[in-house]
Length: 247
Image (cartoon, helix red, strand yellow):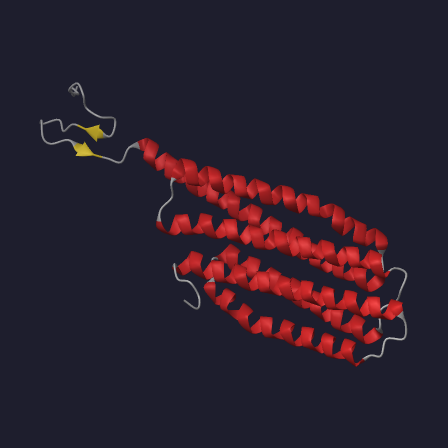
């Protein structure tokens, strides 16, 4: 039987021959690190879910606008409450991790980047609420066929960029993030194309003028969504590498 002298810490063992004690990492520290990374995994899963809700809002809101579907537009507006609730839940999780775990280095970057990313996703969803409300304002008018085609492309582009940004976050892959810069040029070109076409028209009445104004605002909403996707990509680069793109 080996005697353990009084005062020996929980993380130390005594050699049978009276030699020096062998110190091991305290069990509670190992468990704390495991718990922290489990919380990070949960956080990542929630952000991916928020990204899916936002992408769905972009697709559904665009289709409601194109179809003049008031019921679908109202559903997009109503679903934004779920986006807000999940956003606040993720933010609270981040604050708890910062306060209780005091993460360092790469772990700290993950938490800080997540706070910024969920804000960008929430703002994109809010912009699609604005697009859905535009469906109300235009009803029961019909969209010009060419305007409809451009808006369809803009909605698809916004959804694709947001999806790619969330994928980059999920994989912590800056290579995906860098690709978003090139994709953003496509959205800029669509915006310019829509404005050129709107300005080329000679509005016949007040309703046509109002529709042109609303289409200009919708184009800006899609452009801002694309910008939010690029910002998410920049946060992913910082999260993965510690470098600020363009700095």
